[in-house]
Image (cartoon, rainbow, N blue to C red; front, side, top):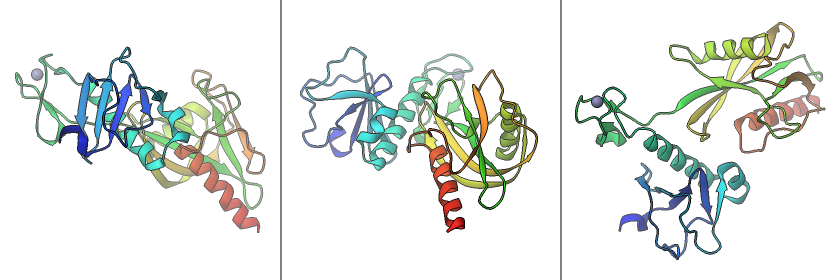
Length: 256
Ligand SMILES: [Zn+2]
């Protein structure tokens, strides 16, 4: 049945076609994808050219803009589809000898010349929500990147480096970006982050030492915010927001 038996996620560049093709499987214009992948869970990821005609009523939206328009499960599957398409687009040739790669078992690709194989991977990043204070005067260390929407502050995040543990990455990022140290690191959860190929591993931590000194190369500002007087926060699609919401709920639970 080809593409007919799983849900299709069609991307035009980094934008997803919405609505998803649920009813009639033909989009009304002949679909000529540049890339087509069957995902492990049976869905299909397609990418069409920037100038590919779109069917009537179909919009192309970035994943962040698509979030409020989609079921959260579909949004997560669309992000997964996007990550696989991106991986495939960036792994067409052997990194060692530049020969064109061929498909191999396990969703990987193999070089027919030197035998090197590559498998879909992602970039692991840490994100950490730092708190200080006791009882009703809990504060969060939140920072502002110039890439954020105006006024928005969030938790500190950064990519891990080769040879580094998650705990070491947290301490390094916190020292580099904020000039402080933290303790009592606790795992909060994780989230695939398709911008473009991340896996966010989230922690909470307590402030240990140092005053906030935001790194001007990465941040516009960083401050301690009281839990009852928070700035504009990231959209509810991100694990940063889930952590902040959990901290607020925990503090409300303590005070009632
Ligand atoms: Zn090779």
